[in-house]
Length: 112
Length: 117
Image (cartoon, each protein chain N blue to C red):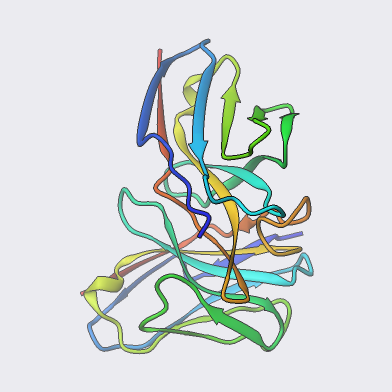
């Protein structure tokens, strides 16, 4: 199973760059890596997705090394509103079906 | 576009009662899923569906039933509620199977907060 491992929590200050790394040693050839953000009392929402190398959008960057066994979500210049839980997701083909496994996520706390 | 809607927002049940959590999406997505999230925990997949008439079990399916008679609707039934089912339930949908490409972004509903006494 393509399970993911992330740090449980991280602290940062406003204006800093935050990098959250996710390990996915058993990622399958066809799997994409997707990151979600969840605020309290809300459902997760999509941040960014990638397959290899680097992807950037208006919110974040995603760095994926050549072996694809890990990925790093980079949030530039975080603000207090970036305090949330961040989940790394990898597609999981299991007994003919497709399931996505959310790990416990990384709780990011941004301080003033 | 309403996206993914869930009803009710809050529900209190007594042990042994049954109920159905409703989920609907108006994006013509084939893939739908139900998750539960316990306090301070990540999401765990209960059941999912890859299209109308097709459902399968996730990580924690016991005590729950689902059906998918239409593309739009994916109700979750609690057969006999237990205190261990106290949780927040999220429904999600995506155009294609999660993890498989650019069209697989999951859109989540606002959640149903369920308490079983």
